[in-house]
Image 1 (cartoon, rainbow, N blue to C red):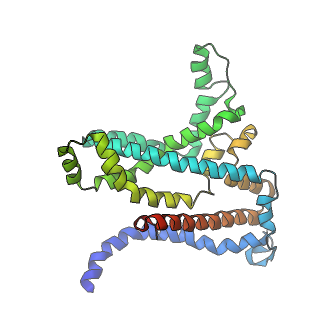
Image 2 (spheres, one colour):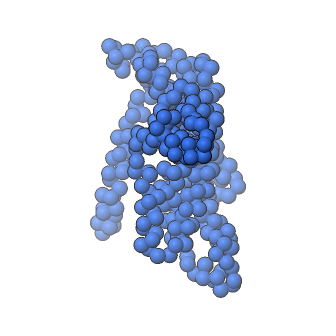
Image 3 (cartoon, rainbow, N blue to C red):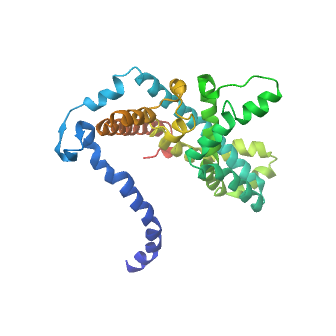
Length: 302
């Protein structure tokens, strides 16, 4: 028993910072869920404020924007899950096929760099490209082609594409790390046997690599489905520069709640939105896992 504890102690110490972070950031705030059912007043405090039932939840559904923000949140996340997975796997396979460790480290560092930038910085970079007066696209590309400048922050039709591209640019390199780790752990003798049998690299990828990645893809997809009602606030708020003309394609549940909170200072409404998103996310994870478990129990999350 003592020998076992000595063996596991280093691993427990390594996991300790992450566990403490999860407790502080994810579990302790759960005690504030009851704020979603209270008419919170700063003068009365958390426990002294009056109960208001489901009044705070009406804020999310009683507005004309409810359908728009829900639609945007779900559709964007579906695109992010699908395209993000495809691009991350593509990058991971390319990295594993480079062979030389130095080249892999250089390319991997370049791909990880965007993920280290905050959305505020990325919003400024985007403005440098898209500004109507001083933007690179208008002043350099369109002017060279003899075309008129475009007010990008007044053109809702192009922003779904812009947001998807910015998301992939920032996150694809980071997401590929897990797939690279999985591919690196595959038995190399399988590839050697396939090569001896005459299988090309492309054939090996589709017949060996991708089928063996299915469990990893399934788990990461199930985890992503749980946050399908959450949006990346910085992407939808900082990158479009909070332009009112773009609300039809950039308004999500998170940005809507933030703007409502800034205007009305209603803490109970923000708590209700978080509670609603968490419950729906939990239901979706359980439902998606049940479907996966029915199709292939080995790939299920639980």
